[in-house]
Length: 85
Image (cartoon, helix red, strand yellow):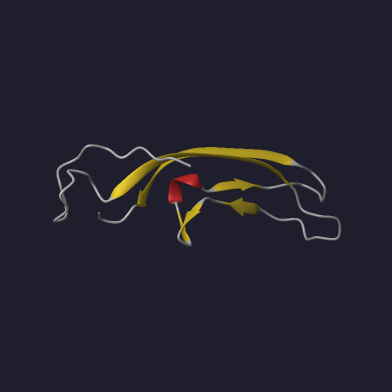
């Protein structure tokens, strides 16, 4: 994968004039359902970065029965720390 590194004012003592993060466009899609024998209720999925949920990517569906499939998708711009120098 390659990220886009924006040309922003320097934020560290690097000799390079770059920020310490790279921008990625993340696109996610899936079919989700409650499996046979499961309990009917809302299903919630979200993208996470380093174990932390990205709030704007939360997707919630509420099936009426098991094996009722839903398609969910979300896209987000994500900043990933790339380190310094």
